[in-house]
Amino acid sequence: MRVGLDIGATKVLGAVMDAGGTVIAQARQDTSPGPDGILASATAVLDLLATALANFDGYRALPSYIGIGIPGIVDRDRGAVSHAVNLGLGGDWFPLAAQLAGRTGATVVVENDLNAATWGAHVLSGADDLAYLSLGTGLAAGFVLSGTLRRGAHGVAGEIGHVPIDPDGALCSCGQRGCLELSASGSALSAAWPSAGEEPPAVALFAAAAAGNPAAVTARDRFAAGVADAVRMLGLAVDPVAIIIGGGVAHVGEPLRAAVTAALRAQAATSPFLAALDLASRIQLLPDRLPVGAIGAALIGNAG
Ligand SMILES: [Zn+2]
Image 1 (cartoon, protein in one colour):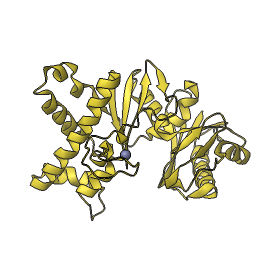
Image 2 (cartoon, helix red, strand yellow):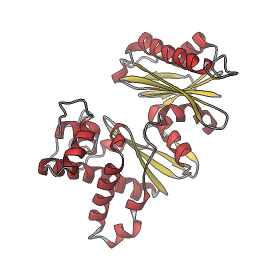
Image 3 (tube, rainbow, N blue to C red):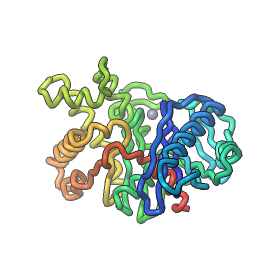
């Protein structure tokens, strides 16, 4: 058995996998920021998982391996993380693995959260050659190429959200102008379609568009065109077998896949070259409600 934790800005998701790769327990907890808060949140999820496991005959303790996915710059060898701004971590290295190992006695491996989710997408889809496009607050991609996770020489492979596509566009937090993430991300979608109700903005927007609201149709199609730009970038740069869309916006499900594939077909309509690549048919969504980041974190130790 293995445990995976996906530590995000708002919540920590935990999953326990059995030897066959099946999720046998899940738990979640709000994230408290800062080193002490992160440790407390992670420990709370481990306690919840231990309680859930106690309901299974024969399981009395948590496994001795804990994999963690966390945003920011990750030093895997030291099990440390820095520059995770949304988690309250600055430039100082936070030795998460050592501290959590000290509390639990387990072997703890720390990985960048996008890499962990990309590995989870690989496991769940069965695809050995894929780009994982994460539509969360921001926009970024990860790669498993010919079965190997591509982290990049400096750990920034797939940061396509910060490819500028509009020289006259708005200033991005990264200091450039008109970055792709400003038109194709959860934040961009929330800005285009603020949701007052309980529903996430993405779900509200796609529902309004399906109901025929003209402003929603425009906002949806503009967003889908931005995501299609990202998919085209991945297709032309890496040419993966599968392009898997995940992240919070992916909870929209089939309407999202339909909108993005329609945008890709529209882009290809005037280009026999693009049409020949058939990017639309490579788009996949993962089964909803599976904690892809936690699953990947639990299993990524196998990836070396
Ligand atoms: Zn940027």
